[in-house]
Length: 189
Image (cartoon, rainbow, N blue to C red; front, side, top):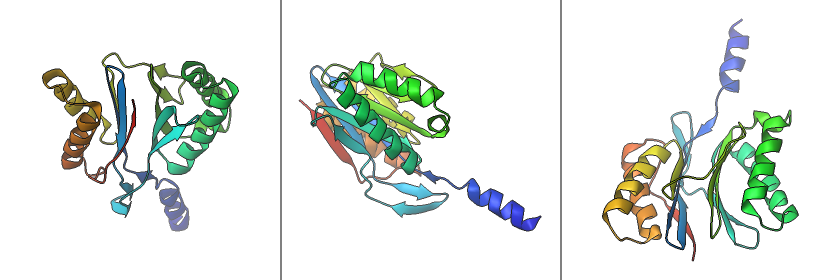
């Protein structure tokens, strides 16, 4: 009985610790992430790259959740972008549909934020494809903190999206124990 309990508790161990923030202001977009990857209460990595450029560098994607799941979804999303010639909305809908209905994919635990020159989308395994109203979206353990900070900065300053992402992720890092200040930021002009 003790062995079965130990195996069950180890099966529930999952990597944690991601904060992704995307800010759009005018025709400029910035997406950034912290670098921390945690396993329970232990920091495993400080400088993970959680934001990627897809489709010839025209689309930014940030991911949170189990790393292997996120990478599997990134591969599928990249294939959808190729299939639909870089159409972000169509690719997102097709990925969400497949993610929700496929027996293997629907077990993947991750969230994606994807953005191009015109759209920012949150994509989930429950079939959600959501475009945020205010041009700000955050995901992961510190995502709500970073998004709240970004919305306040957007409302009260004229800072550029890159600066907003940087400052907001630093604020999230000062609050969330699963977020650090090793920040990576990508921009689309």
